[in-house]
Image (cartoon, rainbow, N blue to C red; front, side, top):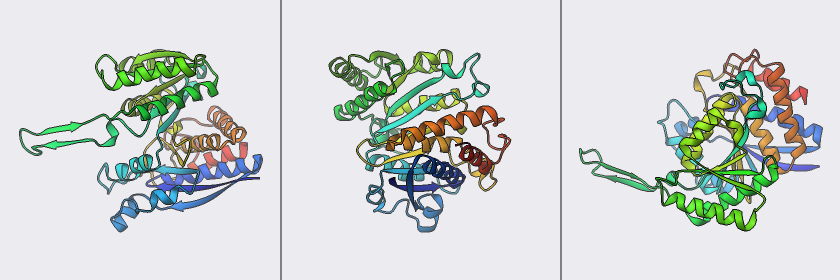
Length: 352
């Protein structure tokens, strides 16, 4: 029997609640498909910060490197200033663990929840591969004359050949493995960001021509990409883009697929520790009410199993979430599902 050691960061707000349902479903899948997950909890989040005044201990990244994967609930606390936890936990772990890919499947499970007219599940089924360690998120830049009428704020986008190429190669490999339309679209802004996306564009075509001739290469400006997400999402198979553009278009993708209640993502280091999470926030106003939607967290568990190589179990969880969504769920919003948080987890686990 395969056995995997998994780190768990329940985090803030409703994070621990959805994490519990994710683990419930993962354990049910393990029993059915013959593998075992061994969990170790870490108390990183707002409550710990308020108690200790320390966002992360210095040992955090080294401790997490002992695990192939991390389950993350959510980060964000109403009593902690915005940015403290997000930068101090999420970004720090993504960078220190070199989780250089943010993987965001955008898949419509039920047309009732799609805000786009006449779009069906077969029309909304694509994946965004977002570079996760560079761009504007490196924090490069600073202030001059801060707090004065002459203040200057500079935020620099850092794009290295190494960082761009490893992201592109992952996207090409993922497109081959996905084996849907075998089409990879580079999303950028070559007409304005003529330095950064000149590098992206050149590397994209050089790598594609040399090593992936079977993959059809397309390009779309980021503004056009957002338009086509709304008008013709069926045009996309896999999209690859930089950190900032990826952050923006994946939230639009979440709305197209039905909302944050169903959207899951992975922060991937193909050679190290990866982290999987629902992409919605901690929703503190719903904490303890047992009304938050756990399906995004459960889907992130399926992504984790796929990453670990338990593909049959991952597919079974996704298929079960689809059937539960179509047959049972009234609405994907908190308190409107027709079931409690724990009942939704029970539905998925028992249906496996």
